[in-house]
Length: 92
Image (cartoon, rainbow, N blue to C red; front, side):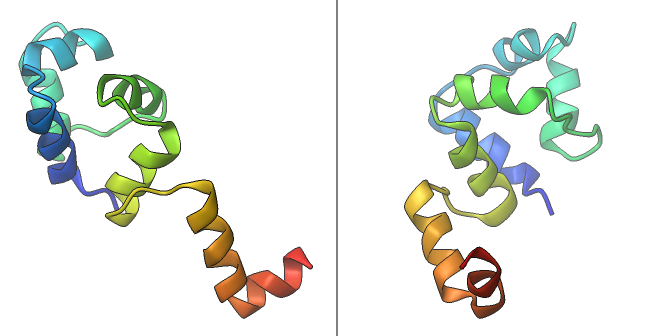
């Protein structure tokens, strides 16, 4: 599940105006992006790299933040695999 509120938190932490986000994603008005933050409009896969760039984070970090509530990095993904017996068996 996407934490749309996290998008607003990231945007406000970086002090990025709504219109700047809207422009980056190709919306004509700030309201287009605002509806994504509120969950009214769908977040499209092609938006993710643009958002990651605007928030100055990797795509993995952004996905971790909005889908899992924490930043993902390679080491945490590997740890998750090691700590999950059924996945560990498949990897080995």
